[in-house]
Length: 526
Image (cartoon, rainbow, N blue to C red; front, side, top):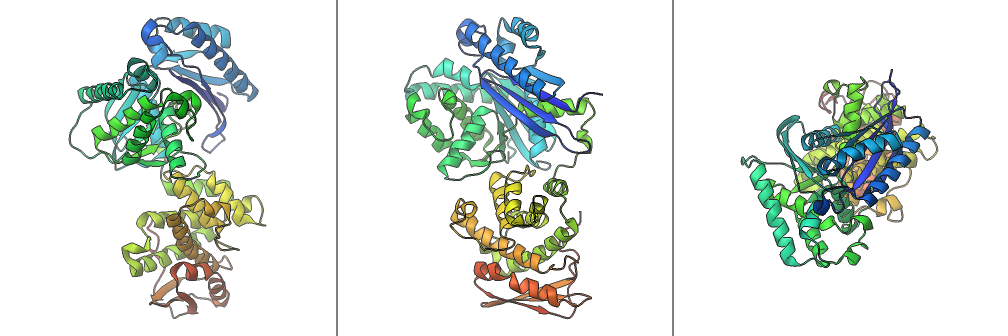
């Protein structure tokens, strides 16, 4: 039986990345370490056609270091692939043989289509695209891999010489970059896309991108928005923001680009070319949304290896937000019976308030899912300690990998859990202050609903069976009913209605009522 610890190494044109994971029994893999080295294997290759001696040495040192880290972690199986630079280099095969002899790492040179398939595997693992038509791109130093797909069905797949290093060396040799050089590069990118990709008129809902260029875009836009999230994985960027970012980068010289927040200095030289490829792809597909996949090829390699060795059957995987939330809740030993009751009550209250408030209330279908996730996860902090468990919940959720929730949405879910008990949101709270004003208002509204719903299950016995809201200009009257005496639940709801009153600017009264409306069906059946 193969050891349950694996490492995957992606040897690209610009950098070498190594991810090391462990596969617990009956659980998804967890990352043990993630090492990166910027080695620039493709440096100068357009002129010489070979990996230079300096790049060769940098790669050897990086791979030797990664092998030692893997050995230290007890990793027995290392899967390594080399992409564009090694594939194209006249001395690429000699490099592979030398690395095997000197570091003990056996490297497989893969084609562009296999690169694209690995990037697609990673994207499918993190984004719910079951009914969507979308495009995937992984931009490396030497090439860009592009996939168009509907759900899990690939329509088109291709690998093109549109890597950030390749384009920089071919078109952008001067500093600062002349405008005419930018125009020539963009015309070339457009020509390659038009020649090789199919324009069939179908709507592409979003572009999902991986690779260092895409991570840098996410980090720079996050900085421009003055947002602070745990990572850029799942981060959403608008086309207009990509256009403005590219214009700003073009105006700056290399020294100025190296000082930009969110951009590592070693990527400053090649970032203009990479962002130009993203901009032209969004233009070509007519899409307005870019989603960042921080994982990419190396994670696709892990997933493929796990499937090969019998640790993962993608055919049996259910990839949806609710499964991810439940899996995380289970790993923290959450009382899901209580979580389900709070979820059911919260959804009923949400639906009634949404119907009353209309479109201007901010209570959209997606925000309903955010509330449901928070209801199921609000008590995960018990995993650390009862005392201050609401604060522990915030930190655990903020760093969780919640399928198909963006960093912004994950941050909101974490804040909702933070405020399900004790103090109300305050601007002096660091977690609340980092949100923009619209998201602060949303946290107050959804948090008020969650806080009230939690109070209505004060005895954790699911005693509230029916619920009805009566809403007017000044108050919300919440009528609850059940088979037993609900005095404790009524008290719990009333005492935890403070945030709801503040958020909706209405008084709250929680009263007992004759059974009239069942909670059955409040949450869509699973």
